[in-house]
Amino acid sequence: MMKDVLALEAENITVNLGGRKVLSSCSLRAKRGEFIGIIGPNGAGKSTLLKSVLGFIPREQGAVAMFGQPVSSLSAKEKARLAVYMQQSVQLTFGFTGLDVVMAGRYPHLRWWQSESKEDRRIALACMEFTGTACFKDTPVHQLSGGERQRVLMAKVLAQEAPLVLLDEPTASLDLVYQEEIFRYCQDMGRQGKSVLMVVHDLRLAAKFCSRLILLKQGEILADGLPEEVLTSQNLESAYGLHSAVYWNQVTGNLDIHTYVSESQQASKGKIHILGGGGAAGELMRKLHEYGYVLTAGVLRQGDTDAAVADAFGIPYISLPPFHKVFSENWEENKRKSGQADVVVLANICYGMQNIKNLEIALQAQNLIVIEDTPFFERDFTEGEAWQLYQKVVQHPRSLVVSTEQFLKMAEADELLSFSSNMAGAGA
View: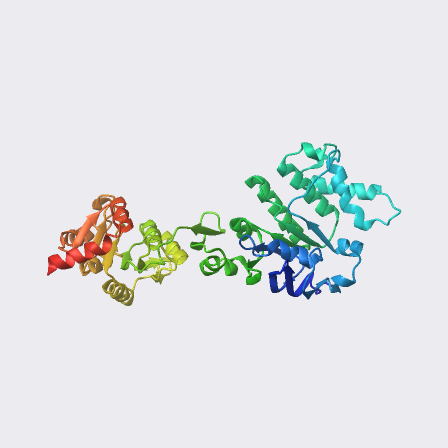
């Protein structure tokens, strides 16, 4: 097979079942070596897409080719040499051993009059060795656990030696350790040049292992691309009705998803500007966003966890490279955003000469909430210069000093703007 020929090419697949359109004009292409996760909510058409590609479900319209050959022109055995399919639920008959099941994967390579050869047995055992199931070769499969059976079935998939692999939720109901094993087998198959399409339920595993994702919604392809291109907050809300923040996890280096119950569909609870940095404001930004406030943030450096949280939730802030000098225009922009807010929040940050101007900006705020979780002297690295400003800040008639816990209770109870109104009344 020529290297530049697509492993799979499906054009305008439409499926109608029982008078209901399950798939509508879905097109996809798979190159050699790709590990493609097919994701979407229940009923989106994920399993139907795989089955229709193989012809297990009749297509109302659309054409499918495997390695440049129209599927309609292939016999069952020819198709099985090109593609292997593992369905979501497989009934394994009593009495079959693990090796019996794996050897069944060799049938496309045998003529009707042939029995399995020593070479077929060698391939089957090698696949069982690869999936860690060689110890089950003589064990009846009904005696195996769910995870053990799935690994035996993966060995059968490998034994078929088809260059295109289609898997329908092979990790359903498995423990996490077995789920990750299955995904790693698929990654290895991709590295060996096979093309893998898997219906995936777990979005985090899909993001971690798949080289590409296809997101289905109500029988149509909503997004197709790299995991970070497909797994966006907008796409997840559109497909799943899910409120989320999608971000790069700094601990694992993987794309991660934080889901939450959002109140953002309500009328905005007000504009909050946060003066943070050094990881002091991350929790404040996350909670305020979830509670439905419109947020901006001040000067944050790339690599700071506060900046990572702001990026995840789409909170505008003034971005600076690490160790980069803060220029006067950065502080002017910070002051401008502060002046546009109903309330300014000064986080429990540490102070050096690079960020002492946060205190000057706080001092000019019309309504200021100061977060104080630790004594100021433990956070002052300016030889007392910041302390002089901080005293003025906390003694300002329109400032309120609270702990993070007290602040979040106020935010949840929608008391931040009432604090602002009370301050305005007091000033009047």
